[in-house]
Length: 116
Image (cartoon, rainbow, N blue to C red):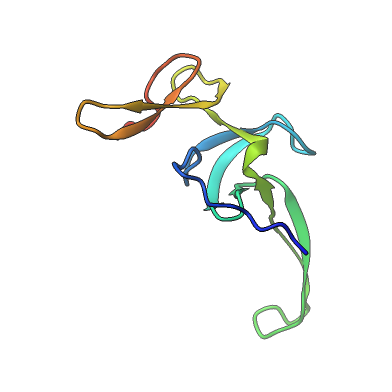
């Protein structure tokens, strides 16, 4: 029987459109933008990273069938956010503003990552 995950991320360290760097696996050192975050299964889909080939059966749009390359998921623990200020792979710190809003910050340069 599979182990059931306890809970989703309590505060999202990784968000859609974050630029991340892969730390382990076959794509180690590559960077890309997050397409999708699966918070329940603790995994992320990154643009042009961990590509796999899927077979496609013949249908009206592709009468020949064939192969399609698409992104496969990576475990969220295998990536780190790239800081937009210092351009280094960093873990995320959480800062609480006076207004009570919780923001993500770089642990290396202490700059706020969530700028709007």
